[in-house]
Length: 79
Image (cartoon, rainbow, N blue to C red; front, side, top):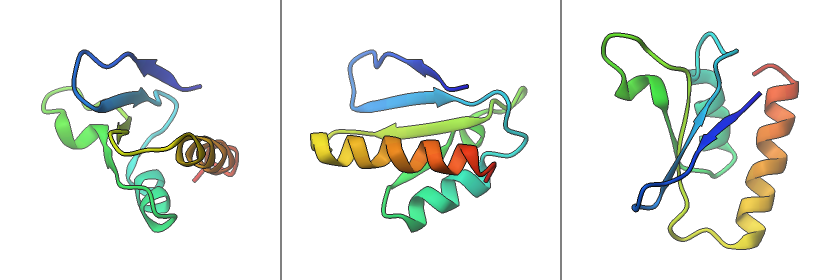
């Protein structure tokens, strides 16, 4: 399950993925597929949250659709 947070200004979206034990492999797989995302856990100090920080400033509708399809596939594969 993905929990999205609406952006408060800015050009990034937070996707929380609480079922993940480690968001690193998912980040790496998305980066390898051509999407520049960061691990949410890299931004946490005391209580790491698993998820992604997704920039969308230059994304087209096609980019967003492709990203969503690849994200769903990777989550289903339990990457």
